[in-house]
Image (cartoon, rainbow, N blue to C red; front, top):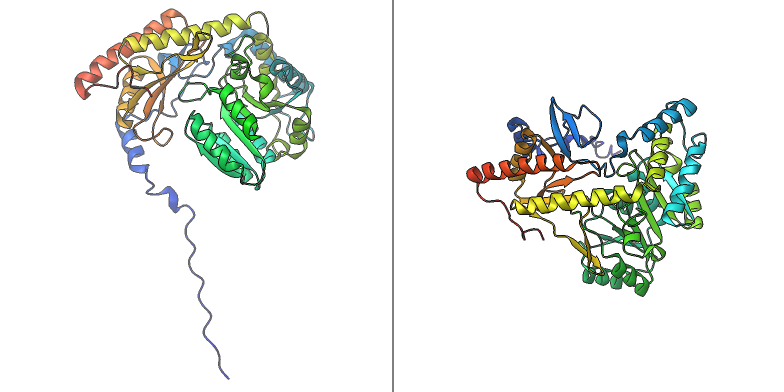
Length: 432
């Protein structure tokens, strides 16, 4: 009687943590840390105002998304305190179960009215708003066409949905049309998703032309207004309002962590879609409700934005953006050009990126500015394409001319000293 082959020994499993050792960025990360050039995770010791205390020194804050400067507005702070007093520090449950309070319902109703839509739904974070909507509305048989510059949360939602993803080159309408032509034979529904204002480049999407293409090819359109809501348009409703296409957009996403001085996100659209999200979106159903203070603060900020004070705040932040952009260009930096929006008008959004090109040069410039009393954000590969490293500056309505002149003075000194040691930086006209 044959005993047969001996039982095979189980193979040793691959250590799932192996990927955290020796990864492609580890050497560069360690070198940046050792040189004091790591531009991330720095500690701010004060509120997000135009000038902050950061790691023991005052610095002009040009790295915040607090576009209207409302995070320290007494009315917003009081609303947060009032919400805590009324509802406690947390709700300890999802919106579906025990996590809905009257403030949520007021906020959703006022967002829908602001956006000019039938309804709106509030998520605990902006990331969840995109992931929870795209991961629910789309299914494996559908196609989603997305701009390559879209928010990471949009890509995450597309991947979660398992829909066919057809990306197109940033703001290239011919590439968008090619993807729509290909999507027509995919067999499912088609959704185009774009940012209204792109978070790194600061430019706006050509929404009228995108809406035309969606209409021609029978696609739905969703616009992420995270960096447009509270800034653009006569009532601050975002890029769709500014460009006059609100009635041609199916879904609009926004956040509370920029102009609305809090944390959270929303989707505005038709009642049937919003109701479907309320009972089907896992990111909504299985996440604890936002803390009452965040909801109360967002509602107060929204009401200020929609009040008679709103237009002056929108004008102030856009005026500051143009002043900073023009000042940087005059110093010889490569910055974005004002973007035409029709009727002889153009716009500079509150995001003013400075093209540097090389990652290490960007880190060195960031450090010199930091030491010179200015904080900016730094975008390095792979957050941007190779050779596309940039300093991302952003302004608030509450920045004074003195604040911005102080920052421009630091940029002038840093550029002079940097180029004397390391060679010329990209100049005006280099930003493509």
